[in-house]
Length: 268
Image 1: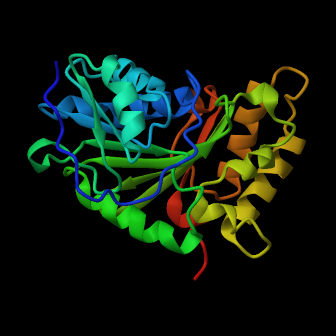
Image 2 (image 1 turned 180 degrees about the horizontal axis):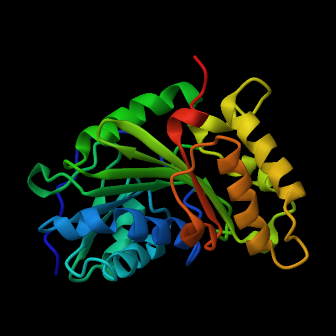
Image 3 (image 1 turned 60 degrees about the vertical axis):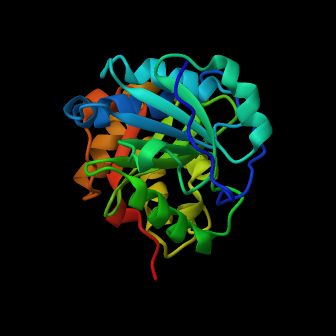
């Protein structure tokens, strides 16, 4: 049985609705394994935190399975602010998987620092002005070279947008979708993370980006072949137009597209 993780007296944060479904976070997990795999392999005993996993432990169980495809020794701690949810998850504990009562303070044994914190569908209920402080607090808990991935998806994981942050702050924004579910790329706007969702208005960079993405999608010459080919061609057009994409066709084929954070960051 895994060692118990100490629980804080007063967890920081608020309980989420707890909605969760198996495989909901598969797109985010797939990206994490690809983008953060090298850092996980360099770490002697990497610990990942599934923060706010919800009313059922499926996402934490799946995260362990997916991380171990790139780093067999990875461990996962599911952290929940609702003690009832923690108690319900405890029967699923096994080697490499534990559950703890806590919030944004991210309690780990001995004050250990995680290599990864995944916070999916956690900040939607917060005010935009609270996001920067939450990001700062979570990034301060990361180990050197660690990663915070914070974002939002729909109920069954077809559409997802997330921000990746290093200990020194945000780095990238990733848009991911089951491409057959999209009429246009701006359909993803409703899944923008809290830091961006209220900035999807004229004059803000994220609004301009989604507008340009829709134009590239409409102009893509491969629409009759497949949504995947249309997405790839749209990404090429965005890059040619000067948008700083940090990935390439290998990720685009997965229905992903990643942009530097500074290109989409809200204006002061």
